[in-house]
Amino acid sequence: MYDVIVIGAGIVGSYTAHELARLGYSVCVLEKQPRPGHKTSCTGIVSRACLEMLPAGPGIIQWEAHSAKIFSPAGKYIRVERDSTQAYILDRAALDRLMAKQAKAKGAEFHFSTTVSGARTDGNCVQVQATRHGEPGGFTARAAVIASGSAAGITRSAGLGQVHEYAQGAQAQAERKNVAEVEVYSGAGTAPGFFAWLVPSSQAHVKVGLLCRGNPKPYITALLERLTQQGKINQAAYDISYGTIPLKPISRTYTDRLLVVGDAAGQAKPTTGGGIYFGLLCARLAVQTLDESLKINDLSKRRLALYQRRWHKVLKNELAIDYWAHRFYQELDDKQIEHIFKIIERHGIHESLLASPDITFDWHSLVILDAIKHRSLQRSLEKLKAAPFRLFDGRTRSN
Image (cartoon, rainbow, N blue to C red):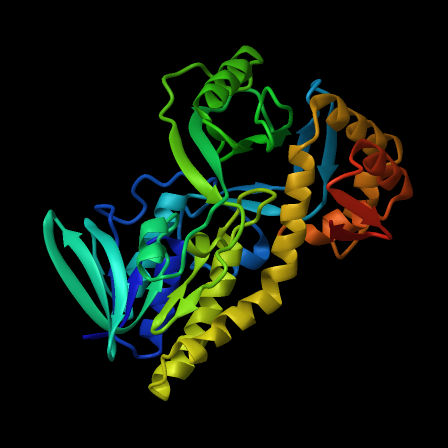
């Protein structure tokens, strides 16, 4: 009987395990992969605020980004730059290994090659059904945290439903040839409904990836070929990884003796798919709620609802505005995106946003709301998309 079982040994899961073990609780972590950091498909681009929540270690930071070029479908670009570092590109596999190591050092117990099939409450405990190295078995704890990414089967088995809207992602590492900064590409032929990226990860390599609603394979293949022809990367046999990104959170992230955090809860940015920072913020609130509840031995649904109230206070409006922006952008065609680029460049909207101290890497709602306060852009957006969204006075409203 453990105090807490954590399902998933990614960044959010290992962070949760570390914090609970640090507080003196017996913690067990179950992970389906054979080792931490195995088959990660995340770009690993985070802000300074996020970096401060993560452990420091040699080789974790691969690159620091000060600027980026954002390309229109026709190939024109807007360049954004600040003097200070705006984002850090991390070695995700190395970070996963370090976080698991630190959680173990605090006393957390890890079981790898362990596939969880379900979790259910049973009287005074949580029963987690799992198969370890091909052998069926189970684990028991006072409480459990689902932090296993796209874990629809586990959340369904717990009666919490599942994320219903996903984006599909693809990413490959390539040899860097002729590129000096982050590049972002838009357009239906490149990444329908989303965008693609080229991110330097060292002096010798870059990460090339994209998000889309459908099958990403033809788009990532075409993107790699195009970047090779442009002389930005060297031609090679690419090892492409694929993954899913939640676009909306599940309606309830708690039940008796059970909480859900990170991508499993849908706590990722609908604009970019980034989930590390928001997942860590919610994991911290989950640990706080569990600590309080374990101390008084009240792990009821009513008590654990406090976790959702806490993370909603921090993220609910942010995720709603980000999702609205994603849906708006998704319905634009290339001609409309090109028009918006021209308006932004002509009126220097990107420069005024960069000058604002309120604009940060993590909180995209501030960028979105500040952008549509510019009358020139607001008028253009209203003409382009009269429905299903309305824009007014820098605020958003869904019909």
